[in-house]
Every structure is written in C-alpha cells, then in structure tokens.
Length: 242
Ligand SMILES: [Zn+2]
Ligand SMILES: [Zn+2]
Image (tube, rainbow, N blue to C red; front, side, top):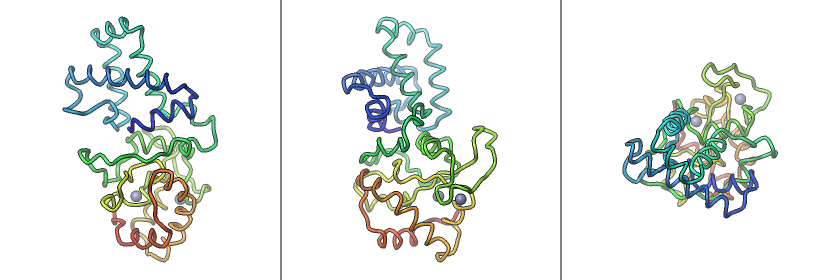
C-alpha cells in the first residue's frame, strides 16, 4: 500500500495533525526494520510493500506475539503497536463511511515503483489492499450501474465485486505517475467487468464513457491527464481479453 495514501488518510479522514502522522511513519519504519530482522521482508522492502490483505493480517499476528517486538514496543511507550493499529485501520477502511467519497479526499499522484512487481494480472485481485479499499469505499456497488446485484462472497462475506483498472496497467509506460491508484480502480460486478474485457466495442463504449466522466477529475488529482477521446482510443487497443 502507498505510504502517501496512509499519510493522507490520517490527516484528511482521521483528522490527525501532520506531526502525529509523521510519528506514525516513524513507527512504520521501525516495524519494517523488525520485519527485516525476522526475515519477512526482502531487501529494501517496507511494510507498505505488503499489498495482500491476508499477508498483512498474518504479519500483524506475528508481531503481536513476538517477544522482541513486545519489548521494543514497551520501551517505546507502545508507539509501534499504536502505529500498526492505525495502519490496519486504514487497510480495513475504518471511518471510510464518515464522508461521502472518502478516497477522493486521499487521491494524489503516486510515483511509479519500477522495482515492484507489475500487477497487470487482475484476477484474483480482491485480496489486494488497494482493491479492497476501493470496493469498500464504493460500498460494494457496481459503478457501471449501482442496481446490479451479485452474490455474497464466501471469503469476505460482502457482496461480490471486482476491481478493474480503467486505464489498463499495460499502458503504464505512457504515464509518469502510477496507474495503480484509487482513482483508476473501478468497482464492477462480474458481468460489467467481463464486458469491458471481452465485449464488443459498441457495447463497451457507453460504459467506458460514463466511467471516464465520473473519474476524470480524480484521475487529474492523481496526476493522470488524458482527454476522453484519447482514453477511448488507447483503451480499445490495450484492454486484455481475460
Ligand atoms: Zn479488468
Ligand atoms: Zn455491473
């Protein structure tokens, strides 16, 4: 998950002071160090690089039962568990329902991490924290048509929806900021998602136009600038059939 998003979550949604947010960042750095020592992170990775929700839950349990971490935390007046706790609240989207469009308050340009794995593969992506947060923030509704209903996911016990990159990740090279951002991830029911990958252009077009209109301002906030016609052109060429 992006460090920039966590910082903005603390300030914009949790209404913390910038100095408090910095304090939490310090905790996150220390936790990353501990995870390195325990062998759970690879070289140069930080806690933010763990983008699977279930991996993060597992890491949280490991830390809470690790004596070295418990001692360190006690010496640091519990600032590390406080930081971890806040981070998990962010990951789980706590207080997202306190404002109408929570993620639009957090949108910001995110640098491209060239050394990271590229997530061009979308399925299964529901375990990814960023996708999960988008689905939560959209209240598990299909953004193409909010009346579309699905079924209850066995794993998550929420309505089943999927995350879709409006501008496909395979176009990343054309942009100087990350496309793997809140503003570019759409919550869709499986039928609408399949339409955008497998449907004929004529049926895709009205849906793409509508989704683009709804997200354009947020894409700009995230440093992603392109016009609607350009969008329709490049997307038609590059969406992979899955
Ligand atoms: Zn997709
Ligand atoms: Zn739908």
